[in-house]
Length: 472
Image 1 (tube, rainbow, N blue to C red):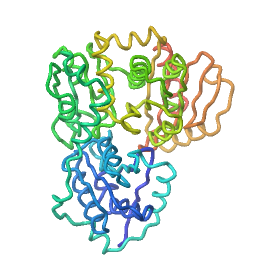
Image 2: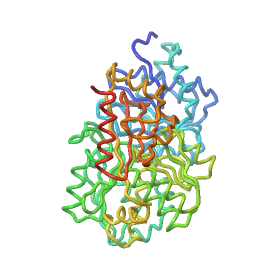
Image 3: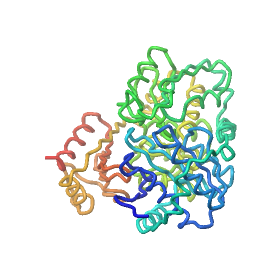
C-alpha cells in the first residue's frame, strides 16, 4: 500500500492532525501497526475515545486490527476521559492504553494518545522511536484490510467508568463534600466529563448543574474545548446566576481543569495548582515533594519551601512530570495548562480528581471560593501569570529559534538577568524575580511565551516587549 502525505509525529502529548488531511484511516493504521513493531510483545490493550468526529470509528478499527493479531482488547462502551483509560491500564494490568482524542484542540483536529503500562504518557524516548518507525513503515494491503473493517464489537466493549469512580471517590472525604450544602456548575465543554462527578459524589445536599453536556463534536459556542478563561464566559454567567459556590470546566478528554470562583473570576491554572499544593501539604499533612514544569508559577516553590520539601522542575509535558514524581516521591504533579495529578490516585493528569481535591478544600474551608486566592496571596505574596501564543510564520520561527538557542546577554529590555535556564526553550529570571519563558509547542504550530510578575502592569509590559522582539 502506498502512503502519501505527512506521517504522524508524536510530540509533547501524543499525535494530533487535521481531520481528513492528516488524521485519516491510513495514518491511524500507521500508528497502530507501528506500536506493534515497537512492542511486539503486546498482549492486552485498553482503548478509549472522546466525543470528536471519527473518534469512535477509529477506536473500533484499532480494536479490530489488534484482535486479528491475537491481542486482548478492552474497548470502552462509551466516550470516556483519558484519565479513565490511564486508570484502566493499571487496573487491568494492560500493556498499553490508546485514546482517540485531540484533547483541547479545536473541532478540526483529532489525534491519538498512548499510555504505558503505568497509565502514563509514553516517554520521550519511546515517542521518538515510534515516530521513526512510523516514518519508515511499509505496510501491506492485508494488514490494512484487517484494520479497515467495522465489525460489531459488543463482546469487547466494557464499562471502564465504574471501577474508576469507585477508586477516585476514595482520595477525598466524600461524605464531607456530599453533605456540604454546596452547589456547583460544571462546564463539560461537549466532552467526556458529563454525569461523572454526579456518579462520584452521589446523593446528598451537594448539588451539581451541568452545562454544555451533550456529545457534540462541533463544540458550539467555543473556540476550542480548552478550559481557559476566554472559553468560559458561559460558565461565568451560570455561576453568578445560580449563586454557585464554584465552577469547574474540563477539556474534551477531561485531563485538564479550569476553575471559576463564586464571583465569576477565573483562577489562573498555576494558582489552582498552588491551592492544591497548599491543601494537600497543609490541611491533609501529606508532606512530600512536588513535581512541576519550568513554566509553573514561582509560588509553588514558596509553598514547598514552607513545608520543607522540594519543588522539582521538568520540561513541559506530563511525560516528563510523571517520571519525575516517581523518582522523587512527589505527592502532586502539575503543569500551567491545567493538568494536575495526585500520586496516590494516578501518576497522570486527571481533571476530575483535581476538582475533587479542590472541592474538599472548599468544603473544609467554610468560606467563599473567591477568598481562596486572597488567602494564598496573604501567605505567599502577589503573583500575576500570563501565557500568550504566537503563530509561527517562517520569519518569526527563525527569530524565535535563534533567540532560544543563542541568546546569552546580561541584560534584555533594560532588565538585569539573574539566570538563564534552557530546560525547555529559554527561561530568563530577572534580578527583580520576574521571569519569562519562550518555547516552541510540541503539539501545535505556535510558540508560547509564559511570564510571571508581582505586578499586573509589569507583567503586561514584560510580555509586550518580548512580543516586539519577534513581531515587527
